[in-house]
Every structure is written in C-alpha cells, then in structure tokens.
Picture (cartoon, rainbow over the protein chains, first blue to last red):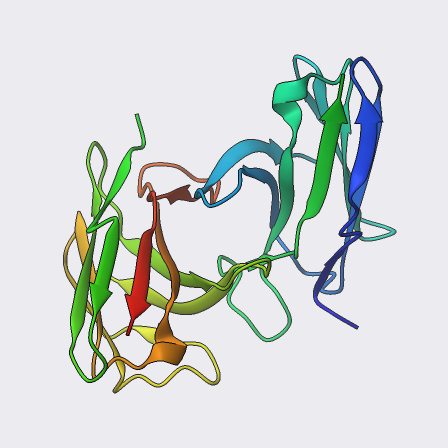
Length: 113
Length: 117
C-alpha cells in the first residue's frame, strides 16, 4: 500500500459544481496534513493546512479523519481557474521523521464552461 | 511573505558537466529545505532533506555523490548535479520551512528545468 494515495482523476466538472477529493495515508502517527495546488509545469503552492477540527477558506473546505486515515478537500462553486492538480501532503510517513513530507501523486481537476 | 527563489529557472547543459541550482528563502529563515525532482506527469519525489549546518539526508535510491547538497546558511541551499546525464533531465524544485512556525508547511521555489543533451 502506498503511503499517500489519491485518485489521479481527472475529475471533469462544469463551472459551479461541487467536487470532493479524498486522500488516504498509511501512517497513523502522521502529524500534519496539507493540500497543495500545482498548475502545469509550475511549482506547488500551498492551498491550505488540514486540521482535526476541519477548516474552511472561502469555497474550499478541508477535513481530517484520523480514525479512517484520510483527508478530504471540498471545492464549492468551481471556477475555471480551479483547474489544476491537487496534491495531498502528509508529514511523517512510515519510518520517517515527523516532519518529513510525503506527497500523493495528485488529483487532476478540469473545470469546463 | 514566505517567498522562495530558485536559480536558474532553466538550464541546458552537455552530458558530463555539472550544474548548480540555488534555493533561497527571501523573507524568512529556513532551518530545513527540501529538494525534489519531478518527471513529466509524475508526482514530486523527495530527493533529500537539507538542514542548515549539517549533512543532508538523502532518500533511498538517490546518489549523494551525484547530487551534492550544501546548506551553508539559513537562507541558502544549493544542489549540484555532478556529471549530468540525459536521464537527469527533470524539473528540480526546492522548498523551505519557516523556522518561526510550528506547523510544518513548506514554501516552494519556482523550480529549475534541467535538460541534459
């Protein structure tokens, strides 16, 4: 089982749709969790950290479920500009220090008119 | 805040030469920097973790004698690809952690696209 798994997609949705991504992780001792966004041929940019209590930033909501070892990202009212690859990052993989990041392969989102 | 620069953004070199890539945190101090490599349509692969003032920790399968990392200050880490070969052609990205924050976010540089001919 991979340390951090994501459905690669692509998720193809119309503008205005709500879309959700999940990411599962294998190390129950993982300490911190993030969602990054990566546009084609660009560097990843931090979208949001994921806290146990869940957090929301505008149209984006992130949730953490430690019992089931997954994190989620919900995007409401999708915009064309949301089209990108969304990377799940978990700090503290198997056999790693608590601050060493492990990236998922990313989920591709395509928002069409 | 939390800006990371990388230089050069693009480099083409001949097989057998060495290439140095710089990663700088511009407005914060970074005790830890990470170096990644990304091949087309693949995920980011962590190559090494660089801590200021100490030797880098390399991931399994990454040759430390080929990918030399120096983290001489709290704002600068360098990656030198020695004796580069065409299979080293890739997108190299660094990231840095702000030592002031307790949450372990990373801020990425814009990346360096290396092409070895």
